[in-house]
Amino acid sequence: MRKKLKSKKVLLILILPALVLLSACNKTNEKLGNAKLPNLQKECEQNNGEWLADHQECEYANPEWCENVGGEYHECESACRHSDAEICTMQCVMVCKFDNQVSSKDSSSENEKSNQRQKITNKSWKWIKTKMNNDEIITPKKQDTFVMTLSEDEKINGTTDCNNFFGSYEISDNKLSIGPLATTRKFCENSQEDDFLKSLKDVSGYSLDNGKLILEIKMDSGVMIFE
Image (cartoon, rainbow, N blue to C red; front, side):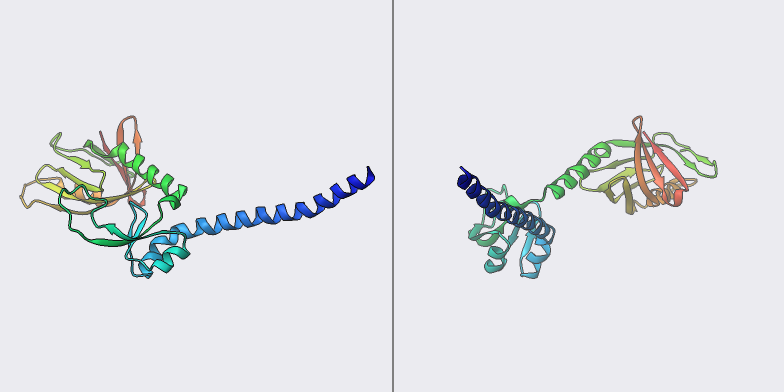
């Protein structure tokens, strides 16, 4: 009986260090694997490849590099594999695929950005007023003329009391920047267009309040309010 207990103790002493070492190795490999994800695009381009972020693929990359970073190398993929075109040229493309290596953190970040855009995009926002921190309140002299729309692909367009305007914007978290902007070339006397567009270009953030879009102007100098 004593011999059996002794042998079990010896066995446990031999097994436990191995289990600890195995666990440590798994954690290390997991960290190394995750660390590679943000660098895939950079490494792809350094190996003369073209990175396709939407599909987690590297075209024309070195096959040896692809294998070393855990990718799946395909020597001859269709050049139209991601296209809905009915006519496609017979062209082979070398592709390194990373379908199973999409970082959950990156995916979560993209989903968050998408949700942010959905809250404010594809809607017509009408300028109600601008409240400055010196208590000055600016309202449109011509109602319903200052309107803007933000699209999901980060384009902006709208109207003022004189011209149409268009341009681009960038959004990240609750930060928002607008511009550059361009307008049609009509002249209108006593127009508020210049002041309105200048305020738009100075926007640094946004929030939503009871269905109203609040655009924060740089340096905490005021807010533009839309509905």
